[in-house]
Amino acid sequence: MKAKIKKNKKPAKVVIKKPIKKEKMKKNEEQKTVSDKNKKTWTALRGMHDILPKEEKYWKNMYNVSSKLAEYMQFARIETPILEEASLFIRSIGKTTDVVEKEMYVFDDSDGGKICLRPEATASVVRAYVSDGLWNNPQPVKVWYWGPMFRHDRPQAGRYRQFTQVGFENIGVLDPAADAELIMIAFNFYKDLKLPVEIHINSIGTPEERERYKNELLNYYRTKKSYLCEECRKRMQKNPLRLLDCKEEQCQGVKEEAPQIVDWLSENSKNYFMKVLEYLDELGVPYILRPSLVRGLDYYTHTVFEVYPISGEGAAQSALGGGGRYDLLVEELGGKSTPAAGMALGIDRSVIYMKEFYQQNQLRVEKEPYDIFFAQLGDRAKGRAMKILDDLRESNIKIAFNLYKNSLKTQLDIANELKVPYSLILGQKEVQEGTIIIRDMESGIQEIVDQKKIETALKKKLKKFDDTNK
Ligand code: AMP
Image 1 (tube, rainbow, N blue to C red):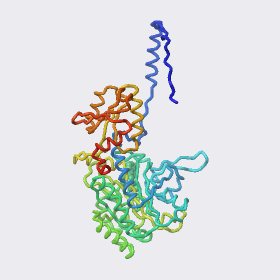
Image 2: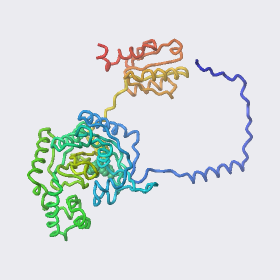
Image 3: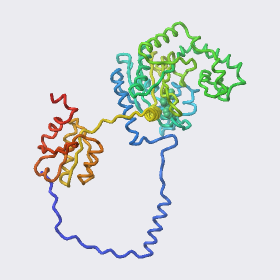
Image 4: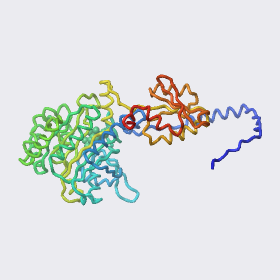
């Protein structure tokens, strides 16, 4: 039953307001200024940033490309909590890494333990693989995620304290094809976004090979100690492989002459790496062999890689993503010995690169155009228009509308701006008659159709439904 609202016929009481006394007005004014002074406004925390509506097109695009790639390559979605036990990351990423030493957001939980905001998600996914019994499923387990990560880093362009990563993990096979598959996904992610990238790649072998190499590296660096920056001297004590990550000008010469890890790999490790490269050649993925690439986290073995923009400037020059093999991590986190590999791409940085590259190359992020504009006139038409909009929700017709504008001219101006081929017009008369007007925006010719037949009538007119009409 339709609810009827009775109209109040009684004339409204006329209230005569007393004039506000001068002193009272003064007091009001004073109050206003005091409260304005006390007004506090908030900005996002340092290193955190809002993603505003105007950015949505980039983020949506990247999400859609990721989920399409995941589906095609048969990676299932996984979501792990943002909070984890702090020890999970200390154990997996490594005590002496920058992430664990300086960048983790660690809190005391009210019931005891130390918890933290995840700085990355590979450790969380492996934790889930062990604790949720994913190792019981057919192997490998291929999963992907998309979500926020937190690192209390020094904020600068392209470096935030909260940032988003999309990641792909393949747990349960030791096969160079799995490594190449991940690199191919990273490469295709940017290819689908029309962004040129190149892959930097290296192999850091097994822990034993790495240990032997570390000794050799230290022997070499000891002879060059006087040329090194402060940080590198510390690295010699704590994490010698990170010596190869140094960006300081004064250390570059020493770094270039340093022994290379490939020379310390066993035949097996070399063959494995060669096979990965062969697959990349076959796939046509461009890569650069970079002997100094070691990645910042402790858990990597064999293949490591990073993705770089080809033509970026400033913030858009840093790595967009990276990954590699981590054959020891599942066991390290309490599971059975299980080979695995994965990669993560930074979305914030990719968006910076995309904006810059698109602007330089006059590319546009294509938005799906609207098919029609729905204009309504008058109160009753507004309600009916909302109902028709709701009924057409599943029709696949993309409808633009503005329920808060009452003038037909203003609404048709919007329709013209949006370049829709047709508009629907619903006025009081049409509401009464159960009809609606379809206006051809180019010729101005208008046709009246039954409201029940809107969907069929529109689909007949719209080119995008041509196939379904045949
Ligand atoms: P990582 O595993 O540390 O190499 O991170 C992979 C990718 O995540 C990087 O290449 C960046 O694109 C992104 N990323 C890492 N840290 C940050 C950060 N602090 N701010 C923005 N993006 C980041």
